[in-house]
Amino acid sequence: MLMRTDPFRDLDRLTQQVFGTAARPALMNMDAWRENERFIIEFDLPGVDTNSIDLDVERNVLTVRADRPAREGIAELVAAERPRGVFSRQIILGDNLDTDKITASYESGVLRLEIPVAERAKPRKIAVSSGDEQKVINA
Image (cartoon, rainbow, N blue to C red; front, side, top):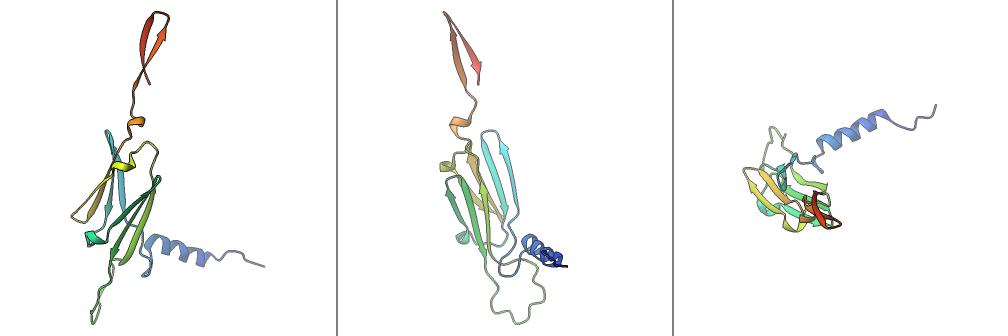
């Protein structure tokens, strides 16, 4: 019988995607929510130097990269549970966000991005006229 898939290889690939490898660490943890007229995203990046954080927006794709370098000069490593290397995450932002006005701050190991809702996406009122009377309808 010819087997096209190897369940052990598939399990190994899934484990590497979830937990990462030494060469490619797992994705950074993230929370995202909306507060009134802004969208907020927070990434957990403990031990990352601010200078190694790179934010890039191209069209509506936000890319976050950060680097936690490997430890150098350790004679005998007893435990290594914190992933090191380059972390990267891409998020597709909706058209209703103003990507030109993104602000970023990094405090206590948390990278916080605030993205305002675009003016064109905010609710507005439209006047409707009928004969000689005019009525305002919420759009």
